[in-house]
Image (cartoon, rainbow, N blue to C red; front, side, top):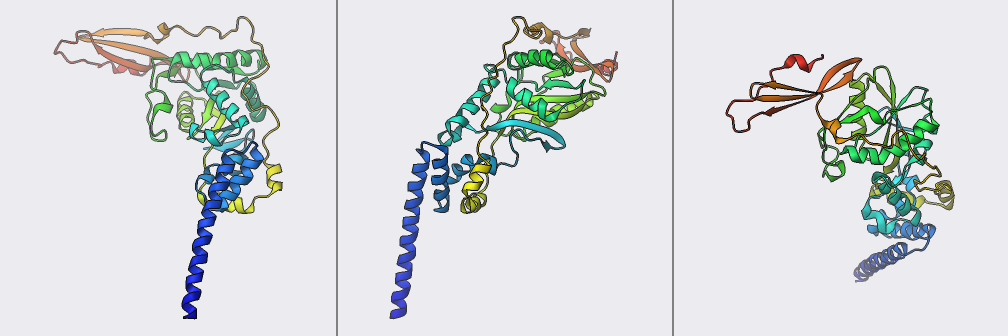
Length: 353
């Protein structure tokens, strides 16, 4: 009988402990959400993680982002052998309730840069200082879904690069568009998506070193696709500069382990940078910049049109290893109602002229 009573008491104690642990976790998590400072949010969310609150696992890593991430801001790391550098972390919109004001401001500045409202010169300068490219290196900008977005986003940066880094080559005009495509952020699975190529290079990149500039590093697929295009043209990507890297949440084991071992010394070691994290930069553009005017849409027109039977063949030419080659071919029927099939039997034009 005494043994039975002891077992019942142990079960009651365990049940009460679990109940109050859950209540304590909810209280700490609620306190973390409304904490006025980052330090309080970090401490409350840490205790909520230890109390077993799942939601706190999405708050605590954000408060110690530099400790939780694989890569550190403004420190060069390699992504598939390409040296990369970024300014700070970008958090998806679902993380907004848990961000500090500084983190919110930085994320908004990244979005403003994508929309052409911020020039992004600060992260360009920081990236160049870290990567230290050789004189003659071509700085190219990641092609966007449309030509208008591309020039709106990068032309101010290209002006600054042209003025302040004469030893480098600005490659904003190296990219020629052949139309629009769907934006990458509209795709459900970025890792497996195959986007239609809507650009080619106007200039020859044979034996040239290239640095790529882009907004956000997430999966790295866009960088690798662009690298393949540069290498096919004879160039070599020697670095990449990003405004931000998308923050990836660590797993539950990491959260519990580091919440258990966290100390104030860690807080000081991985404190946020003292520098301003916005993308603004105290730079006044010239009244007339060399890259102020974006190309007209007429640049999308083919370089050559050939009539062949019931077929109109449009050809676009670009440079590949010092020679002009056909980089895009479009086959269209002259008479859509005709039963005569279209023919693109012009293989000699696919190689070179």
